Image (cartoon, rainbow, N blue to C red):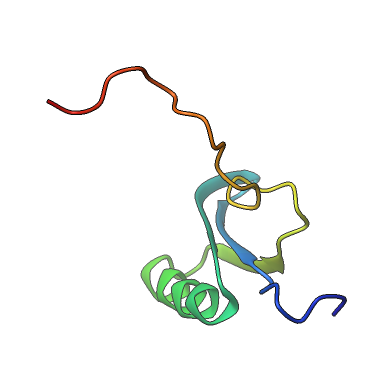
Length: 73
């Protein structure tokens, strides 16, 4: 691992044929727990648990700017 301070995230997907019906990104321990739970819940469907390659939905930091002008009232 190049940078020990950065934790690797994992992507868990539940597949129905070629269609993804669940997609979850988390730290390795949470991802493993989620994958086991999904395998029990959706017995017979393929569940994958892969390292996130930097292109996933949760791999980018959120933008620093505000997305709206008004706060809650």
